[in-house]
Amino acid sequence: MDYTNLINDKSGKKSKVGVIGATRGYGYTLLAQIPTVKHMELRVICSRHTDECLDVLKEIGYDVNKIVVCANKEEIDAAAEDAILIVADYRLVMECGITALVECTGNTAVSSDAALIALRKGINVYMVSKETDSVCGPILNQVAAENNAVYALVNGDQPRNLLDLYSWAMLLGLEVVAAGKSSEYDFVWDRETSDFTYLDGSSETENIPEMLDCWYYKGTETLEERRKLLAKYLDVIPADLCEMNLVSNVSGLVPTTPFLSYPIAKISELANIFIPKEDGGILDKTGVVDVFYNLRGKDEASFCGGEFIIVKCENEKMWEILKGKGHVMSKNDKYCCIYYPYHYMGLETPATIILGDFLGIGTHTECRQVSVLAGVANMDIPKGTVLSVHGHHHEIDGLTPELLERKAVGNAAPFYLLNGATLLNDVKKGNPVTMDDVDLSGLETYKLYKKGLELE
Image (cartoon, rainbow, N blue to C red; front, side):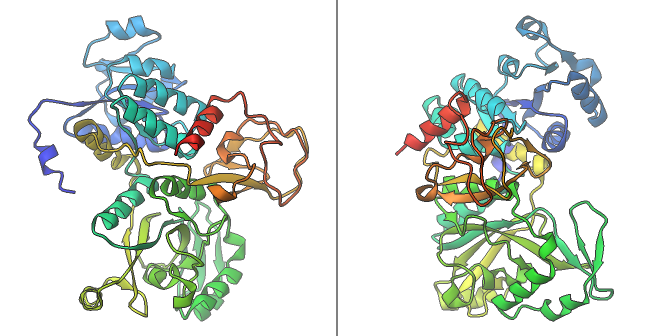
């Protein structure tokens, strides 16, 4: 998309942004970018720790003289129109005259309630909290449409970036065989020293000279060899499956398998891997979402947790021309991999906000619960255990996430509604946590999830 007309907009309109969950990670990167963006200004940030908000704004370089901490609506109303407000109660954010709410707490109860309050007031909502969208996305999109507001996933996170790439392919009439992303951290091997590093923040390095035997891709047997060598680094990551859940619900694409495939692959190999088995790939079906681990040499660029689609090459001569340009094609020339090797977190998100606030782009009324993220016990879990989401990967101890097509969900409970739930029964290893094992009836987010399931 060409953004020039938006850049040159002379209407005087501005996006007035409120951010909930603002001081760390995604929220920080957005706060750091807003001051550089034309047609946008920060109006309010919200955190239970208002002192942290103040410290962050100072660190980034916001004008300290404009910052006002407000405890209630009266103090908000008394503040200057160009003041930057800090509040502890998320419900006050919608009283600050904002046009755009960015929600990035990761707390399903808070973010769903905040989104509903905002949308019903006609305030556009930009959802970073993927946990919330995985269970409430269908109904929140509907509420947005009913109130002439925008509800949107955000650029800078993989689901929106991948959906943008997918919709681009749909616009062009391309047949998408598979869509996905790389997992967050790379597998890096140094051919000179044979040292292998998993870039997950640890400093662990392992010498694996055997990698040379499966460094060059010969077929799916190469994937099996890599998997055996690197087995201890492999995992099913809740955040990955949740992000593919979001893409599935908007696009209609379904998960390849409940735990996704996670092949260890180089970028140049993707068009040979995420294709049907009859063509030498790993797919039992097409029209799917999936994830891979990016394998690269020490001196090679990263995929950066980026996104890809595999498309079918219909016109032989056209794709022969494109192959000559260096595009990533399958060995049989029937498939091409098209990819974005990035997701820049909050740095990109202002583009989403401007598109929503100025052009009304974002709401997907077609969003349905196409797939559901559930959890399978990876150990025996006794009755009375309190389940808790924690950590960088938003995991629950004792559970391995699985992404199920809706028709296969049965009585399984949604993964991110289990946070804080107490098990009513023993759950044996290998069994999913079901609606009989927990009582979710009192959760407003569960009620929203149920309403979403009722959409035709």
